[in-house]
Length: 251
Image (cartoon, rainbow, N blue to C red; front, side, top):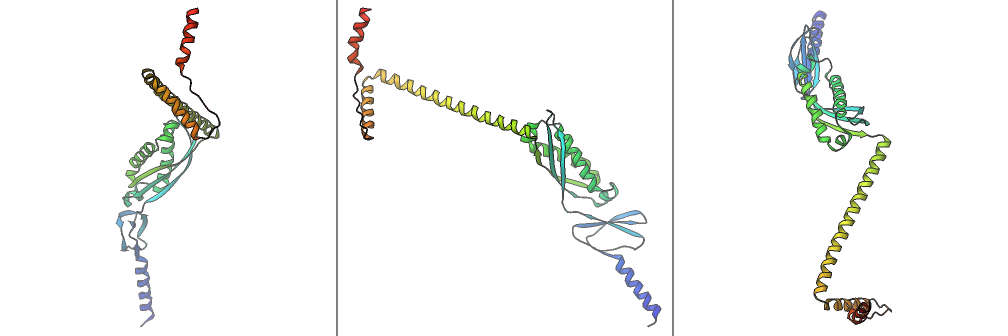
């Protein structure tokens, strides 16, 4: 076997080795032939012409994008720092490569500006209490703008809201005052219910005077059970009525 033939075989093997590419199940390869896109290939084994074809790989798995803390002034003029996390994936590899220079960087910048815009339009109380509404609004805006890039934003979650120390103290005082107010209202309602029951009991005793004597006897029984050295003798109020009547007649 001559040397030129061996060289030819070596070059052929080298050519085919460089022309073969293996793409995973979650990857797609956008192939450009002389600068013109001919389609997205994969997964599996693909063949392209070295020196003429160029390929860019695109990952189709869900990407977790961490949005760094953004300085935001809410609608009620409170300065806060808000961070979030965005979940998205590439649905169309051709659009992700051709229609945008860098879809990762573009999505990141769009997420930061949208986060500042949406949170800046909300008040601080809404920002803390209605996170689901804020998340849904940001996700809708991002998905609308990234759709032409072949990118689908599946979810957005506001991760952390950092409040100034002064605002944290003010909120703590407000929460404490609210708890004290609820305690006073509950105490007042208890007093009102107790007074209502006492008034009903007084009405019943007024209709049945003997009930008062029974109450005296029950009180003596309770004192005796506790082994108390103090002895109580109930004195009927009727014994004092003649004296009270005499005093009123003298007046």
